[in-house]
Length: 344
Image (tube, rainbow, N blue to C red; front, side, top):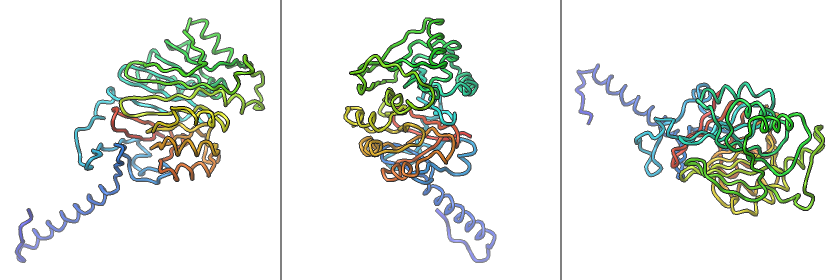
């Protein structure tokens, strides 16, 4: 309670006015904090662009947790990062690699390009990873399996999940040679499969677009078969507590149309890793409407690779968009609330 101040006590009056001014500033600052009804907390920025306050984009600082009910400060469940699920979508240019760590699980989705191994290796080491419980290669394009052979040779991969086709390429041969040298268990995914890795639940959805021409071997490495190969992408849904994440590989229009008919496409997701490096199509927009993601991530080398209609679609459905050319995207959840940040 602020008492009335006598006119004679000018210094005290100035002091009180200063305090009130500071309180107003702090109140405005708190108003910029956005707490969504789905327990998602993020710094104020631009919906559809993922832009953050300058302090966040420079340091990767995470936000203060607020309760979804009233926005008040509560016990911070993010204080101990080892108790969280963390997904790191790495800054690897026009390629994909996501490291997911939980208290009892290490999952790697895709292995980027060959020249990305140093970043992947340093990230694994920084997180204290010596073994990978589950490695998923969505498809065998070079920008998704480039470092797979080196990872398999240098880290114990307990289970490797791959789509049901073969590839004639140096990186594919390097991956197979590493699997054989290390006796890594391989699961070829031909039907929907669900399983758990510790406290993390996973569902893998393969394509059936090419069932009538099995076995399929893609034997060109010049880009002419990219669309066909992208449509072999395994789609991965991950659940931790009440939060769900969806990774679409490089699925293109035909593959997304197929996936949109599945039960997984009817769930709501906190995070959606968008397919094929900034491309957009009508089936992706339909999926955005169905899955209502809070955050969308594009793995792209620069802003010039982004289809402007994609960012418009993300904005239309009320999601925040992050692109890895701005840095590695770090998504954390305690199973109920989520936070997101970006590292340069």
